[in-house]
Length: 134
Image (tube, rainbow, N blue to C red):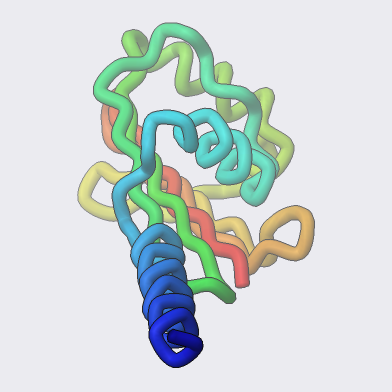
């Protein structure tokens, strides 16, 4: 009987570790993680809060238990809002972007709060924020 209880406990422990691994390595941002992922990305990049007039928001996460990468893609309603957002963002306002194929790329290395860093790409009204922490 004791062997069966030990075996069941061992199987339950392995199952819990498996679920934890799946949760940590999952690239999908769960609905209750959305605001936290956005806030973490903005803080890592020294970026201002996103304005309310954004659309087509997509959040992707990558990494392991020791690293984390958030990729946020969105569109602004008006390109003037992008300019205002850049001017209000600590790490973008004095940053000179690299321009290639009509895409402005702002590199942010190192990031804020011991983050590795990343980049912000802007093309027309579309913005892609890619920040990493390790």
